[in-house]
Image 1 (tube, helix red, strand yellow):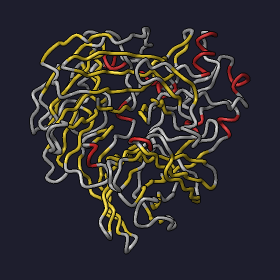
Image 2: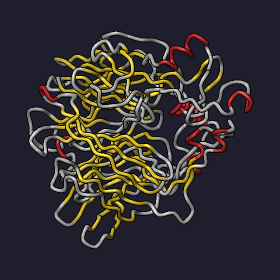
Image 3: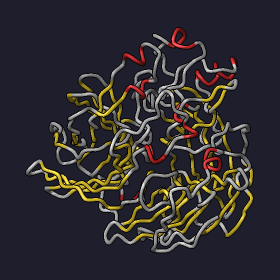
Length: 496
């Protein structure tokens, strides 16, 4: 199922994968397991790999015979993979949100989905029902003594870090109003100002949008406490999933997107389906000074950004006169229309994600952009110790094809300095999810550690856990999960 890692990317024909193999991962999770020992299929698990990998993603995609319109509408399910002394154990739980409990009892969808899932009954039943079900399916992070399941349109759900029991909606020690929007893509400052912090944000959108930038302590008595808080208002509608940080800046990219709420109000579309690229619009970088940095209390800076649409940023770094930010750009906002079936999408009709570097000249308010890789990619990551400073190496999920769009089937390591590439592939019958780079705690070398991720193995119609050596993507170990898990979204690593 895998290939030996090399410095050469393999270019395959457009029809290199079987659609039924790829779509087979979209299935309901039928079991909740507790601390189950995983079967080692090959290799060995290093004892230095000690801690928990938490993953979040949609686990319920169908109810009463009706499928969600988009997998992003699926109810969140947490996987916890516990590494200790060379053994790996697995626990999973659905997040008991209010909407999950109601729909489990009813056996059908009683809420509309943001990405187009409709209730039974047509327009009459869906029109003017603008309730949002907090599906808690996008990310999971540990802050203080709580595990937080994140969904950026509403508040986080607090979970027990061991049992994954749902405690309920959290205000994060009183920092949030009830069910206040809280980003699903926080950044962890490894200690640029003396101690590590979690930097995150919330957005109130409209003709003018307000960003609330928050920083939380992550160590000792400060863990989980709000230690920095500011709000800034900007002109225009803000659709923000991710951002980047440096020691002095929080960097947001306001995509040139417009929102027409009428089809959502009248029950014709989900809210996200009402987003579209603004003709002749201009994307903007919003640079917000961090309260811990040199420009605390200064106003934000606004600078024109490149054309295209960005979900995810890889990393950012700064010098006195320049900010460099690496991001994955799409030519247009990728969406699935009301009449489309997400399990039958034509990849050639959807723009691919391309990794690019943008340099922001702070003296001249000008930008320059360079393409770093022409291969379709998503879920880029770096060694977490390099967050906000120069990172030489990156790891990402890619299509197997060298050019053009396709399902994510490979993991690539990219040297951002000289362009050298390593590839591990699960093709033709395997499909990957977000990789996490976990540094070796005993060796302080940037690319020394492991890359860990799920693979949908269509040969056995199940999910594998794969561990690669980070420096060359050679295979360290492969383990079989006892349940099938749909393609997930984000996750985090918590050292033992």
